[in-house]
Image 1 (cartoon, helix red, strand yellow):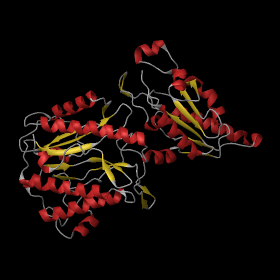
Image 2 (image 1 turned 45 degrees about the vertical axis):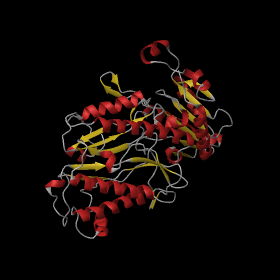
Image 3 (image 1 turned 90 degrees about the vertical axis):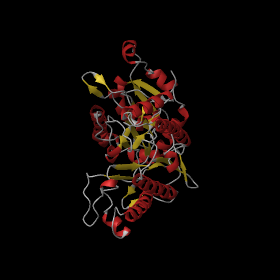
Image 4 (image 1 turned 135 degrees about the horizontal axis):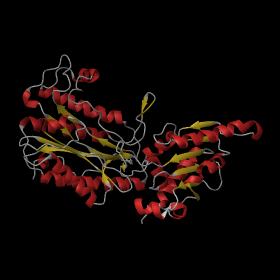
Length: 443
């Protein structure tokens, strides 16, 4: 069996340990999640645990011990067991944890209750995230070990002074992607962009949304991805006005647009997230063309705003400015564009933000604001840029805005790319998926 290159994980652990100083962190792996009865979902490792270890088995626990000179990375893992492995597949066991994944020492998971207090002894702080689903037993053991330290402090003279959340440090670290992560994100974007190109060429009136979904997911697997990064959205016609539409059961109709929001997840969990919208029959109607051209202009303006020193809020604001001005010119909004923006009177047509962080999670970790201040973009941050327009009947038209004419209704458009902030500006990772108006009409 293959294992990931341990070097990037070792470098991340060292950066994390440097940030913790003399603290001790307890980071649990994911547990198996039950789908129904005795059937489990396919295992998906916890992103924080994977980021620090590269170990892809359930129920493990990693200790990162900044207060120790040796044994700073300790893994507790399920031991080798031929009977269990016959049913559920290979385990690396304690030897593999050391030899393949770089642990300084590894123990069977059953030894955790006995050994955890010893490893936490002497730490200035204990880093453990309280309230994690499925980790109640481990949480109790961490708190018991800390309580024992506090109880013995009058005699021993020391105990961890506080319990802290490791994700404050860890998620700040994960927000800035290292060189290895950027290469993996480029690969995820490449595969997804190729799948989108294939899907556009295959679409014809009369095929089903699920036919397109099947094509996308087949290509992801054939290209070496683990799976789709999220349930693909394949939304024909008015279905595109449902932001998280995933039933994908209807036939594609002549004259409608098709919105496809789909990305893949690699074997090491890095994701892509791309959206394209195009006419099912290869030809925009007048209204469709007007709204598509406007959405594309808004996205281009937002992409140009991505650079070091800018903020995600400014990227969003740039897209909103272009959309609102264009909607006023088309008669879908009425009034002073700045006043419309300040009142939010455009949100029945554009109700979401223009993007999110992207990485090991599709909606990746990292703050967007620090108190009153938006987070400033830095090289290595990866985000999506995805303005859209959704002209339907679900959201009420704000007072003072014009009623929507029938000719506009049922048009849903989103254009989404994956973007990394660079020292010079930005790199669009998903640029291989065409989006200009002429390309959307090619078959």
